[in-house]
Length: 419
Ligand SMILES: *Cc1c(COP(=O)(O)O)cnc(C)c1O
Image 1 (cartoon, protein in one colour):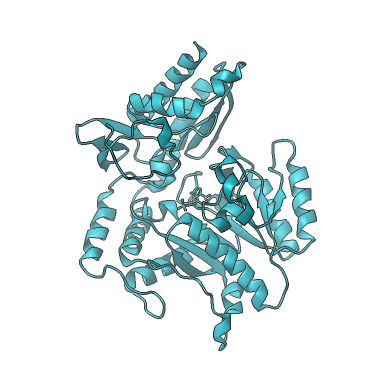
Image 2 (cartoon, rainbow, N blue to C red):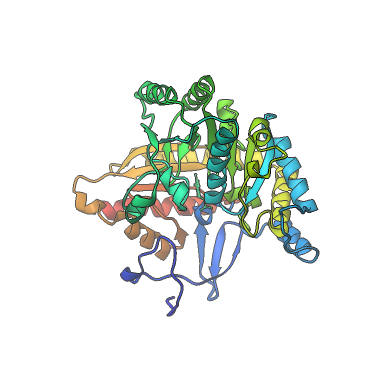
């Protein structure tokens, strides 16, 4: 259904005139329009929905909180939902992470992380401001977050504004040591921090690298006193098979960014956790050393209540068992397509499964992602391939039948392309 609309959509080329479905409601793994059509949300509404849409417990928490306290200035004032959430986040993350700074999106959690790192070095009196990044990374779309992400067509007009960073090559299979050596060399130059998406680079194309490489990168940074920032905005909350991707590598970051699944994907909220020395470096009787960052909706009480409900679901429901079952099902479906002549690099990490579409004729690959997206949309599946990579990242409540339908539509799409 297309309606004349003043809305300017994100990552959307309105000039192509593609239909934009008008969605009315969502429940579990499905979204519905008002006419009763439904789609299986196989990418968790862009990686945010974890347990499923409209989880009753999260919806109830939002309702209850909205009747008590809607919004509160968070500079110099506090409220119970934020206090409870911060304490619980500190409890479930590794001990060295002791402080929680609230913001409202993944991008802002990254901006906060970068400012924490630079603030730390400035306040301890060291001239360290360079940031190291991993090739093909994505950390968000604000200027600072773009600066530490991959440069390309999606940020070309803004490049004059982006700051210079040191880029470490992605640790491709068989070339891991090369990447580690490059990191070690760059760390000798005394940068401020290294920011990384642990175990899997999301928007970069669902690129996976092993836990031992992550652990080694962390060790290198520790040896050189370079702050290690883990951007778990996508990987957090179970996507990679464990609550946090860093858990699989035994890695404790100095700074940890969380958003997307923090509220179960219901409302926007983000946090940046850090180790005590970073907080302590800002602690002073001198106002000039305080952490100059805020957003209007910092720690919005309703969003915090939703996040507290998410944490309660993790405590009380068999979330890990659902993740394990979904991961197994994803592995089985992926295995069935891995040998398809149009498929390369079938890969999976926890609940995330991805494959690349190959074609001898590059004509097949041009505009592949939008063509596939339309193909799935017409068949009741919400998928949004990245370039020639098709990935499935469903909510944990997705049923076996729903998942089979998603993979069936992928199989059909590959055959249609071959034809
Ligand atoms: C999505 C994402 C972000 C940005 O989050 P927003 O909420 O969209 O600003 C940052 N880092 C990673 C790894 C992400 O996947």
